Length: 65
Image 1 (tube, helix red, strand yellow):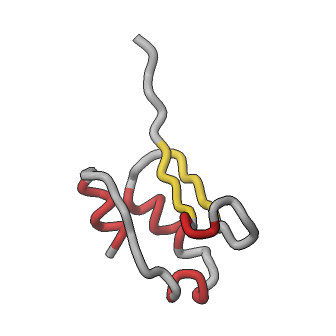
Image 2: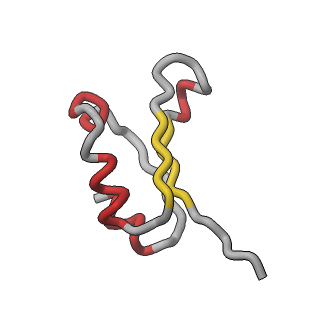
């Protein structure tokens, strides 16, 4: 059986692949890793987040906070 690789993806869905569609892809779903990488985004981007859609993995709730 092959092992499945999981990734966390962050996009600006309203940009629909146009300029400004910020994208981050983090290998795995470990909340600390995702939070550390998102923490490198400019504050302007983080402060403009209006909506978050997550799956039911408990680590994503921590990332969203």
